[in-house]
Length: 241
Image (cartoon, rainbow, N blue to C red; front, side):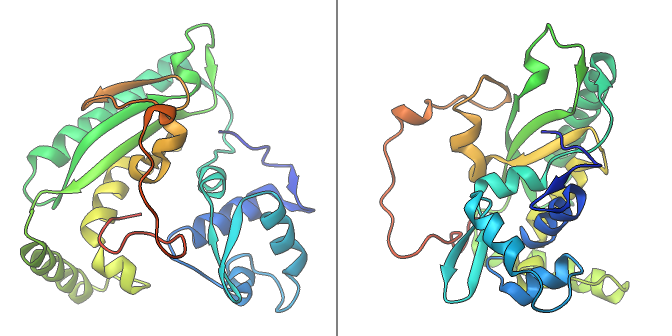
């Protein structure tokens, strides 16, 4: 997905809105004050932006004064504002990305493993030579099945990083560092790779033309059996994002 770096969203610079969503997407929920801080707005001045984001389906209310990013908001937060790239450049970036996937899976220092890699978007359309980015979704699971052992290894890793001066902003960053470390490494600071969480975006990815580069394909969304839901929509306690 590409946005115009000079364009606007709800009267605000498109890059400002995208970066706001990027800041907020890692949080389970947030309020108006937190959104204003993320967008560098004056306190009390972000209500119109929040109303527009909600009307556009980019955020949704999850409690009194609390909001969260929707799947559409997650997609916008991953949008690129870079100039189009050639297919050759895109293929090189994808090759390097798959090399990082292999390293994660064979390197014991990473506590997460990549189970699935799904390519979708414009790169699958061979008639398009100028691409905005390379859309990839990954499913990352823990290499250690035992939750207590995983938590202990993750805690030791976090403690070592804190001693080195690394700053982790929230309890989510700490608890799921094993997952976020893998995701960041896979992204590799690449402006070309647009990386999504397969578990969170499965309904989107499987509805559009896609290709499994690693792991088994799954039924299309209309063939899936809906899972029962209880209570408000929130991220599973032990399921990253």
